[in-house]
Amino acid sequence: VEVSKGPSAIKYGPQTVAGAIGLYSTPIPDQALGGKLALLGGDFDTYRAHGLIGGHLETAQGYDVGLSLETLQESSSGFKELDSGGDTGFVIEDYVAKVSLGSKAGAERPQSFEFKLQYSNEDSDETYVGLTLDDFRADPYRRYRGSQVDQLNVEHWTYQATHRIDFTDQVDLTTLAYYTRTERAWYKLNDVRNAANTGYTSLSAVLEDPTLYATEFAALVGTPGTSSAVGALRVRNNSREYYATGLQSVLGYEFDTGAVGHLVEASVRYHRDEE
Image (cartoon, rainbow, N blue to C red):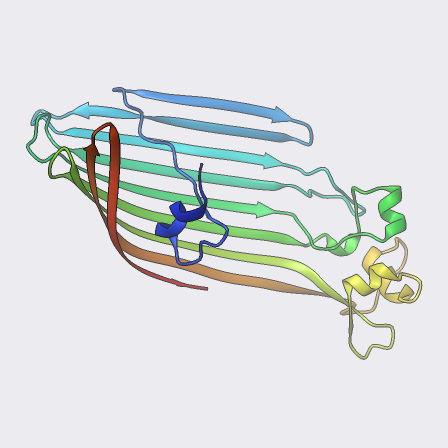
């Protein structure tokens, strides 16, 4: 993780009032073959497995080739308790593959190329629905029956290609092409049909005054042995898609003036995004 504040965040602009955060993925292991494996387990059927394997080798022609595969698998049944029973947790799968090609040792102008592909998927049985104040005080981990179908589904892809060339020991050029896409759908309880059957009442209003909205609250809680009117609960799908793509080149120049070292960068970027 890299955090940039103040003038150092300028190159990540244009919206840099609060700074910028850079998240770096795991590099290809330096050795011929390396990796790691981390396993974690806990309450509520929670587990996490994080694994990486990869390395570098030299081809018969003297080129350096690198490859790595990484995955994160995480799941939990959730710590909240639905009145109707069922999971309130999540399942996450994440995969990253990298391949690189480097110049021969001793090349006059060393170059390297790396391609990264990443895919992740998440299914979370999560909700916006809260509790009345009295119910929260009695059991903050409770969830009403009306929220049992709420679920968030997210898919994300990243494609990234990076090329670097060192013209001299002082001058280098790095070019990056990238494309990311995210698709998410949150199926969640939106509101409750009012007692007069003329429209819908917001969840916040029902939970703030369950006495005034007794009929609506009964439909939300789903009291055993009772039936709500058809269409009493309205679920909506908050479906969204995002993508970002671009190309940038950064020219770097390193030099010294006495005991002081300097790095000057000049860059140009084309970027496009949409939601």
